[in-house]
Image (tube, rainbow, N blue to C red; front, side, top):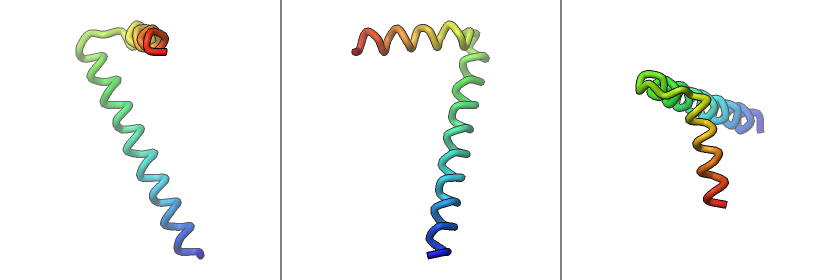
Length: 52
């Protein structure tokens, strides 16, 4: 029981870490590409509205 919860905690931590690094790299590439993050976010939101 105890080992399972510890393993689950580690998995959650690894997932959160990988997700945060992916977001960081995504934002970094946006900034390096010359995109304003706020503009890209609004563009993504408008795209989502179109899809829905």
